[in-house]
Amino acid sequence: MAENLLVLGLQWGDEGKGQVIDVLADRYDVIVRFQGGANAGHTVRVGREKFTLHQIPTGILRTGKLCIIGNGAVVDPEGLLEEIDTLEKRGLQVHGRLLVSDRAHVVMPYHKILDGLQDASRAVGKKIETTGRGIGPCYADKAARRGLRLVEMMQPQTLQARLKELATAKNRELTALYGADPLDVEALCAAYSGYAERLRPFVRDTLPVIGAALANGKSILLEGAQAAMLDIEFGTYPYVTSSNVTAGGAAVGTGIPPSRIDRVLGVMKAYCSRVGGGPFPTEQDNEIGQLMRDRGEEYGSTTGRPRRCGWLDCVALRHAVAVNGPDSVALTGLPVLSALPKLKICVAYRLAGQVVKHVPADPDALAQAEPEYEELDGWQTDISGAKALEEMPRAARDYVAAVEAAVGTTVDMVTVGRGRGQIARRTGNG
Image (cartoon, rainbow, N blue to C red; front, side, top):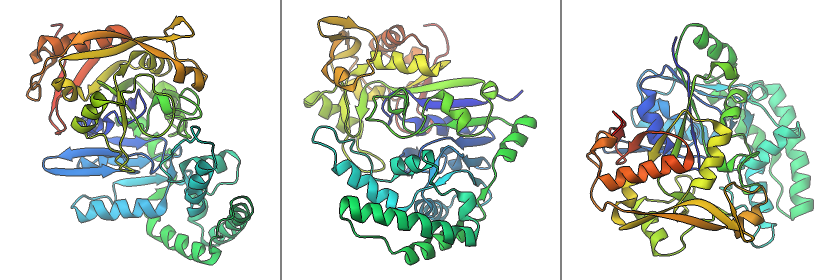
């Protein structure tokens, strides 16, 4: 029987999931994105070309693979069409290979406006610093049962009536609460009618498609966006995304029964990075953090914002492993640390005089946590040519082993560069 694999991030996102998924996607028939929206960005290098994907699954870069945006995602029609056009201009076939669930909710212009206004209204030090792509307000409307789904967008008369109803209500909110200019409802209806016609070949009920794939023994790769510490339930709330990022969300966001997900692969970076506000105990707002940012090219693929960087937080990783249950881990970004003579990993927090080995639910408590570090030797040599973990310098292998011991999981593959083939795999017990 074909294996169905779930790949997700175990930190605050930007772990390099795109590269890992791109390598693995060649073995799978169907690749399904199960949550998030245009706030995500997977960057993949293929030869000398660089692709940044926001809504379309990474599997689109592999010839002949069927890619699906699942019901758990939220879709920005304008951005999706731009992404499709860009890929096809670069010679990639998207038509006939991409499907979008008609149950997915639609991101509207008022969602983006409200995203910025709502965050701006928060007190200093309490801002979420979202991407401004309207993802949170769209998910909020979904939960409040006032959202627009693609199934309605594909029905011209229904779309016009719903848009007038929704936009009129949102205009009252924009003007009365925030003093913002109202949207032109007629222009909005015209624009989204046009998007609907262009998206029509891609939109359908994807449940029968996924069901047929399962019944016919096709292999499925489930692609997560963002990461576990940004999960709406188990992340550093309220500094989180607005969807279920963790393993449990994969079944909900696709309609695949949990029992049909055979294996979970977690992706974690050899250090930590974070975009936006929120507690980050191991952050290095110094020359070490800047070195990580520069060597790791730590600038948001969606926003371009510089990412906050710091030492690996194994307390947060244990939390992510506990709620996701990965069978193994892919470790990325290890070459970034090659320049450093000494390395640190956080193995516990000190909070109110006590040693704590779990992530507190209170974000204020987490912000006050002082990391307890284990120090290791660096290797200060190029590892980009390694094809197996056993080919790496002893210090690099010791670092991997220390992370495995601290987190309680197994590292099966390590990225040693950003290229498609730059993966070192575990081949033995050395």
